[in-house]
Amino acid sequence: MDSLALWNRYRECLCECPGLGVSVDYSRIWFPDGFFESMEPAIQRAFRQMAELEAGAVANPDEKRMVGHYWLRAPERAPDDAIRKAIETALRELKRFARNVHSGRIRPPRARKFENFLVIGIGGSSLGPQFVSRALWSPRDRMRAFFFDNTDPDGMDAVLAQIGQSGGLARTLVVVISKSGGTKETRNGMLEAELAFKRAGLSFARHAVAVTGDASELDRHARAAGWLQIFPMWDWVGGRTSELAAVGLLPAALQGLDVDGMLLGARYMDEATRVPVTRKNPAAVLALMWHHAGAGRGAKDMVVLPYKDRLELFSRYLQQLVMESLGKEHDLEGKVVEQGLAVYGNKGSTDQHAYVQQLRDGVNNFFVTFLEVLRDRHGRSSQVEPGVTSGDYLSGFLQGTRRALADKGRESLTVTVDHVDAMTIGRLIALYERAVGLYASLVGINAYHQPGVEAGKKAAAAVIGLQHKILQRLRTERAKSFTSEELAVAIGEPAEVETVHWVLRHLAANPDHRVKTRPGKTPFLTTYSAS
Image 1 (cartoon, rainbow, N blue to C red):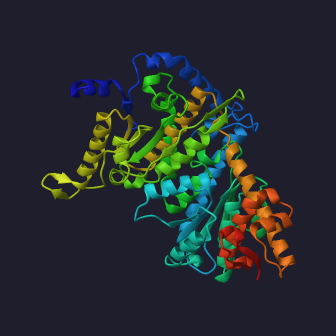
Image 2 (image 1 turned 30 degrees about the vertical axis):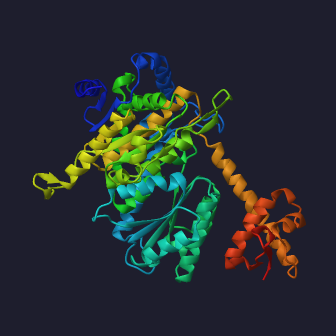
Image 3 (image 1 turned 30 degrees about the horizontal axis):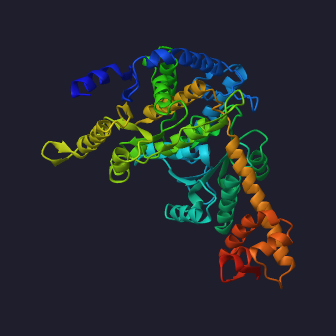
């Protein structure tokens, strides 16, 4: 296709959101003539299903609950007054709490003010807050943000060391986020933090707040211990769509970010993506392009390339939002469909020196989403050569990569925003939440449950249960050494010998459990005993 033809295609395939500063260019997705017409009945059905969801329909039949993250930025759309009031009250309370922390009205026992906050959460309870924190950071932030987002002891030690260099735990507020309160990674992070505060001679309860479900395990623990405050998580907001609930708004408010701007940006994008005119609806365009590029079954991966350092974590945020929502074995009728859409990415132009070589010349199993930000920085830029700034080069690299991929028939979308601020972040969150919901309707799956995640949690619990049996046997027979196979038989779990072997290797590598090892001729003849 020659340059003039590409220009004309671009003019036809640019979906702009008037007044929002957001556009979607889908001209480099090579859909055939008649594609939109053929998909129109399906996308109109998706619009109707989305309207029913927003009106309070039970959209998650597995769990018999509504899905209402759209109400967070438009409480008046909630299906009843109780939900509306709960949303408005939570927002009012978290903003009041943040103001009181900033003013010193709520203060730590051994310092004048809280200067840091530590978020303890995983998945949607961490990815969204981290993305927003990085995207909207400024030197004028009211508090510095830190995160425990895994059950990795070494990672937690690194964060605690960083906090120690930023005023220490005495100046640190802890925000523990878990809907059920039973998420093991979050619980472990909370226990590690409690121990760190105890070692520092500090009362953890005087530094802690919770974001959790009513009457959850965490809720009961926080109330019994006398934590500073508890904020709600409702069963109609999923973790991956909770950034505009207290999960994400409380950390943002503590950091001093514009939470009202985020909510307003999302609200305006919701209004734009309710429009049932397909080519004027950016979320519908995204969903249809994903459907075409992946042949309606996720046959190609989505590579997300934000050309902006502030948006570096957007690909990780989208990874959970998209893959946890769309990666499903069964459709709504119970048929095995194994749907999904794999997402990966980092940032431009870094990735041009990483994997764009394969994208252009290697296996064609992907499509790209470029994220373009028109404004380079606040204020003027210096020139790195006559008439050219660093930002000009960043734009040039994006355009060059887009063109190089198109020249080889590789498909791409480009989402453009004017600049990065709170309203823009809210718009991006809402745009992709809606696109995911519409795509799920197109392929007939439930976007709002995650049975695979629960299966992994159950399997992990089984491993820990087996570890208890292993340690009990080793301590009962301290004089005896076992190979992995011998110990699996001894504890009555011969079929779990591989898991026994993995557990023993881990126990022996760490001093906590006092398991010693004697190397054998092969790893499978190594013996283990209690020291």
